[in-house]
Length: 128
Picture 1 (cartoon, rainbow, N blue to C red):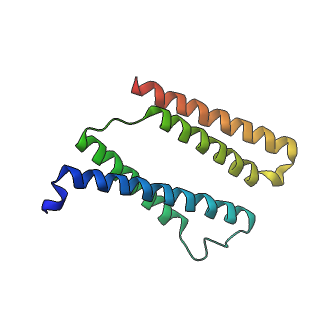
Picture 2: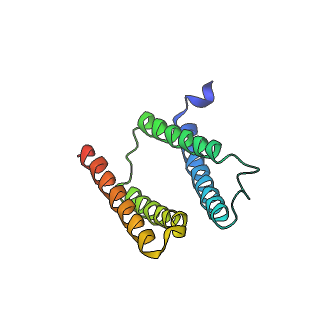
């Protein structure tokens, strides 16, 4: 257990967890794109919920190690990630409501994006 008590090793683990998170998110993005184009092509072989659980656990481990090592989060990076996630979410929402007609699809997508934006603003407000 000496390995986990050394600060240098914990920093290496933190970097590896960050890289693993990037790979997981990239795989998740492409899996969702494939799933939206060809339904059940990915979910037949890989549980999407399990992938989400692994991503969530990775995020919790990263935040735990950052608190333990007293490393600050980069808010600029978080805002970039939030913008990318909002764009991806918008594409997925628009793709899922296309069968309703173009006007209703755009309206539902706009409502969803506005709701997500306001939720993000509320969560950011609590940090201040």
